[in-house]
View 1 (tube, helix red, strand yellow):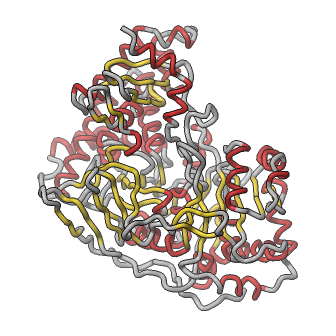
View 2 (view 1 turned 60 degrees about the vertical axis):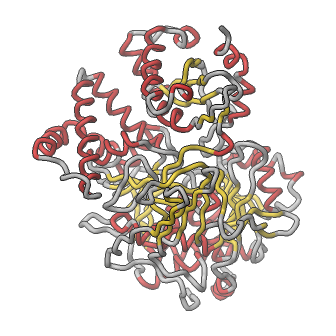
View 3 (view 1 turned 45 degrees about the horizontal axis):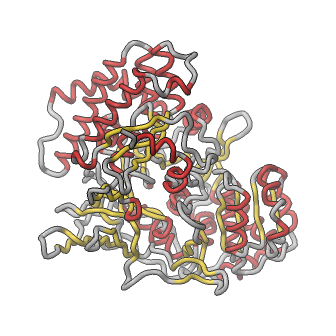
Length: 640
């Protein structure tokens, strides 16, 4: 295997970097308006992500960098040398198929080993990868393939293959369609046998940090998705600084090696960033294609990761399942006491780390020790038993759950970012958490709050711009070096960022009150009975909400209330159920003023899902679509 001289050695160092306090700039009113943290990792000046497998193979050939699930449920390690050999073989196959440097190749699959293998092989062949969510509709997939000008598309299975095939007549650029489960990668390896290794070396040598690595299309809550052009340098700036900052996560400081089981979509920048970061730091990575509760729990038990990449929904699900199990055993009150103790413990630890409190007292430590084998150990066991850290993003987790998991022995690193920022722009700093916030700027990043409250970002991970099909390049969107996120937020006195909502989601009531729906919606979604919630009230006299029911939580409630046979159309009007939801609404209303509180709510018989057209692939509400489809239910809430 021939390789060019590396300029991208993995960011693995033994020393824990000292935590650097952010530099703060205050506005005329005395509030913090801008914070920045210097980079922990030097910028990469040469090379690309394509070098990572080959650097690993040269420096630590026997290290297990990935694991693949076998048919019997066991996990087989893949060494750095083995992965580099596979990357090289597939890259040669792509060249043999006639794909040229800079060509776009789409990948439409669940979170699998093959996804990551083809991603790195495409880079090694000088290509640009274009993710497509495996659940995308024919229209969505066609738009991405057309807009990106993809010449090849790899799918996981027959149903996706049929979906793309039926669109082929309208996709003049698409000349190749491959399917993972029929051995496409094996055929590419065979096809490339006569291609010399030097052909791949030459392709890799043309790539630089400023070269586009991927086009990731935004979910598109309104209008058509836009392709975010992320470069190799964007990913290096993101993952290298994340690896250095989150030292205990990516760099094992115990006898148990660092590892993670990735179950979030690789089509999303969050999952993709962590996959690249794991290969960069040589952290053992596994893939879990199914997020069905029983499948995921089985994979976690078999793989036993040391940290997880999660969205709040997963952590909420584990918590609610634990409580439901306790209730079935007649121990709900015991679980609730344990939860309160964990929350108090987590808050006390946070206060001690900030120097604002003495830390957990003897009584609190004793209570936590009592409940550890009864409750907390079971929570950790549900996540595989070895998890000590979770990187959480996508939407706010909330202070209650963050404190609970901290008290239960799982440290939460909450972050905030967008596709346009290659995932995280801020993250909870180790040993200095502030529950309920999304932390400080990632090293090398600056955060500014505009006069209207919009969050502005600057840093090496901020994208080049949106893809322009006609130009075949990115169109810059930054103004003065700052990217306007569309999110609203605030910085506290110590520089911690809190996200309060989306600028375009602000509701203005008929009385002129500005209402940010996110805090109310996030609080309600954490309730065991609630799946989704959308706050309503634009140009109305008061605020209302549409609530959908969480299937597992509802099934448990039915069983406990002996109402398994009540039809759903009757159940949504059930007084006991509505009383339980009203208590949740009342709790949420404590977060806001009277004018911003939810006065009425409707319980819907169906859920908001991606399949129903009410959620984006990244599970964001399509507010306009929901408002249109449930116009009658909304109007009924405002009838006197």
